[in-house]
Length: 127
Image (cartoon, rainbow, N blue to C red; front, side):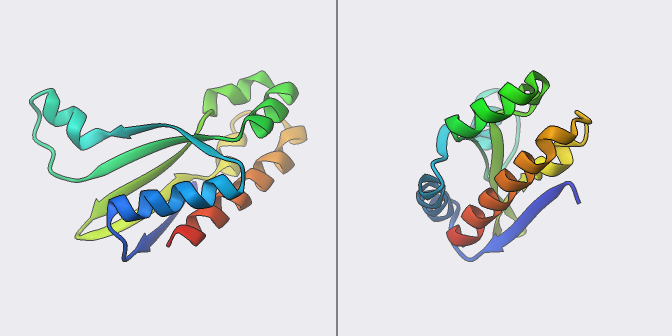
């Protein structure tokens, strides 16, 4: 699958706070948080579902992969989404290993796998 998605009993706000803490342990920071519901409503569009996109980055890892192949920058920063689905909070992300397949560069596949495992660990801790 191209994504990793899990369900939590936490609210969206609780899940994001917990996720931010677990990301810090892996030296990832949240660069930006985009509230899609608010933005669409601001533009006059009906959208009642809570849906947040967090752009996360570990500067050392970003430097490492960009030094190997600058095309990887098309996938940076990493995205983690926290959203409501049928009354349940979900946390998910596109798998870096799936995205890296598009670049077709064997030298960075192991780096993507390491980053993916660490981000999955952060998501799992946030549950």
